[in-house]
Amino acid sequence: MANPNPRDDTSADYEQFERTLLAQDRDATSVTTADVDDATAQHLVSELIDADVVTPIPEDRVLVHEPSGAAFDSTTQLAVFHRGWTAVRDTDSEGE
Image 1: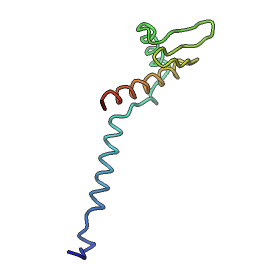
Image 2 (image 1 turned 120 degrees about the vertical axis):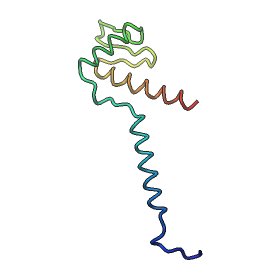
Image 3 (image 1 turned 45 degrees about the horizontal axis):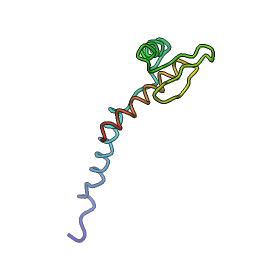
Image 4 (image 1 turned 90 degrees about the vertical axis):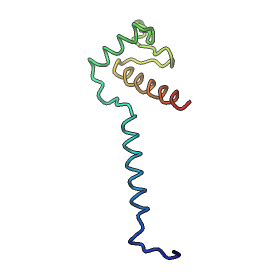
């Protein structure tokens, strides 16, 4: 089989199929942050404040995300950041 028939070669099909499956896996495990509206952000930030994960600093008009030390002046930015931060930490802990 030194010269296989190129019409019988299905390796490209298999590689494309594998790439498609990997992309689907990546999509299934990714965190969606685009759907964070103002109400959702307010609710999440309130829960984070109650859980002592976020500290509001009224005089500076910022919210500090305690585990990372990052400061935000927008609840939406903080909510999106926290979702991403949590997703990365969850992914890291699964790999260990």
